[in-house]
Amino acid sequence: MTLSALKSQTKLTAFGVYVPDRILTNNDMEKLVDTSDEWIVQRTGIRERRISADDEYCSDLCYAAVANMQARYAVNLADVDYIIVATSTPDTFFPSMAARVQAKFGIRSCGALDIQAACAGFVAALQLANGLLLTGVHRKILIIGADALSKATDYTDRSTCILFGDGAGAALLEWTEDGTLLGSYTATSGASGHHLYRSSLSADIDGHPIQTTGKIVQDGREVYKWAVTQVPKGITALLENNGRTTEEIDWFVPHSANMRIVESVCERTGIPLEKTLASMELFGNTSAASIPLALDLAIRDGRINKGDLCLLYGFGGGLTEAAVLLEWSL
Ligand code: ACO
Image 1: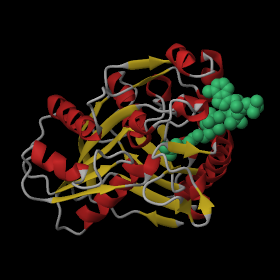
Image 2 (image 1 turned 60 degrees about the horizontal axis):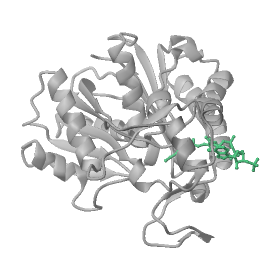
Image 3 (image 1 turned 180 degrees about the vertical axis):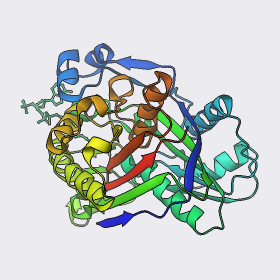
């Protein structure tokens, strides 16, 4: 566990998102597997999710989120000096999605890398970008959380396929004298990693045999128990270390995995549910995209305002956690 009262020279200056057009509702899921709208809504809070077209991949989701950012804010991407893409579903391991974004938008030769922290990826990218900006070497960083989870979902497994959807969120982070990233928290429970995985080359995780389908596999109950235990601890530690209380939080933005997890975390920490931003009802669990998609819903309906104190909390595969306290700056 790493705690810090953060030194920050990061300010979020632009923001964009994308979800594919195709909608898969719970009623559609009933035609694929033995399930029901009632079960899915009650157990997860999910009503529908977006599914990328057959020829639409993670890179396309990244491009569309950045294009959306360009359409909404007067941004100059030419002098971006680092690109970080958080994803668990890249089109290819290399070239990275970040290198593809650099080429697509004609960004000058700059740093480009993909990171893999599953559903904690977007917040982890924020933390890394802050570190790069603090060095003084970097001034403008583009981060993207993007996942085409439908491409890695087993649509014969009713315990996972009802959960996942596709989407992307992009943010531009710029160097500033007084940063608006106010606190940071990270934690990892690596010994429990085999409860949630997507296989690659090996059929084993440290002695635990795994399915080698390349699809997402999870023991939902184990992940659920871990999340509702660890996330409240992390919130308490992050707030205490930064001299803040739950009352001061304007918006709690947890990874939108499951509404029941969010409700349980709110109950255990005393954060009112009304102060929570979530995206799973409309988009399912979109992994690295779920936090930006929740923020975007609140930007569009005017709930979130400049100066609001936000607690972003990513958690998922690894099992890993990444959280920040952020003063909203748009
Ligand atoms: N429709 C109907 N019944 C179902 C379905 C379904 N889609 N899926 C499972 N069931 C059944 C099970 O077979 C089981 O039946 P049984 O009692 O006859 O054996 C029953 O429902 C209960 O199953 P559980 O797995 O105990 O259901 P639970 O209430 O735990 O809900 C869920 C499952 C939604 C997956 C939940 O465990 C969960 O959300 N876990 C956490 C998931 C998560 O947060 N992942 C995090 C990150 S994902 C990432 O990082 C990529």
